[in-house]
Image (cartoon, rainbow, N blue to C red; front, side, top):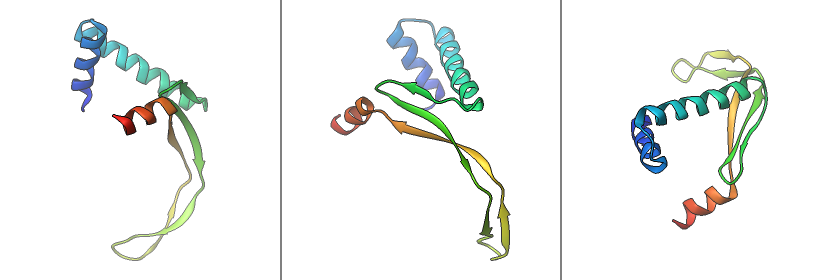
Length: 92
């Protein structure tokens, strides 16, 4: 499913226009992004939890040349599936 298909499904499920569904989706994604940038977790009960984690700098190798490279530290986003979503995906 891509963004357009998701917007169409939201509009149909919520009985709203596609323009309003697009605004809702963009607003939700912006809110999640803003919270993660602040270091806050975003928990959607039954769906899952978005969180961030620090990944330390480390040494690596370029697979083409075999030359050693330094991989910089960064913050990564994690998602832990909620029980209800996991159950629904596994049980159809």
